[in-house]
Image (tube, rainbow, N blue to C red; front, top):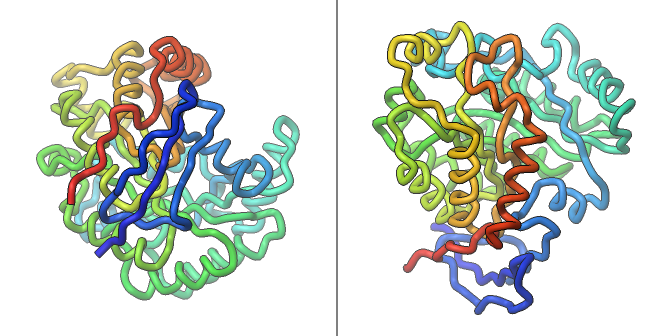
Length: 343
């Protein structure tokens, strides 16, 4: 079972320390996690600055993995929203070695955003779904690069066998290892519709196994999936706030060309969140989110050559600026409405 912690939180708008609260089923280093942030939410950039003493940038890598939703194990068409690139359209060239992809990524970034160290982000498809010896080789190659400070590995909760967990645990002793789990929603009906391929119980088992090994857990959530009400989406955030996760990626639903979701959208014209609806939803998610969870993403920008809708999402900087402006105007912050669960 998960252990308990106490934590205190200071909002960016208040100077009064909230009373000490007990959170069941959670354990993090130290007795207290006091959050003093420049933004009204626990941002990834600020967290990295505090942890590593500098800003880190992600280098997206592609190690040629596939997915049980594509190789015939569970299906052949992937999740309904997933493009042919397996969410790795911005990742590196799988024809290159990991070192070559890292070096190419550094060259691409350094002209505009000079940095000393980076995060190796294994992004495309399911990055624990390969033979163990291959995974060990490519992960270690990334860790051995002198400019890599941490690994981020995107995968599925049903693709974490014991031997992979043991490997990740061993690597975590060298440099921090983050495991990014694609959950998208807690609702089984939606999960079935999007062809996620595993029940919520499997996600819970993965979280418990990763937590027991002190591996950092980042969870992907898609907002705006067909058939989900605002309250259903907020239920996902409430539920995740009861689990020992470290980070959250909130992703706007994108409809991309050549996906089954695009065909469904053409047939049904289901409602796509407007920018105003999305910003309101994001703020509600932050208000309910446990304050210590690091927010890795508030939106996303799909590939311009594939994006069908919503087109307003292409102005990512404008969307983020509007979110920040609205948070300030509403005098609200991450965790303002969060209520620790009872035992």
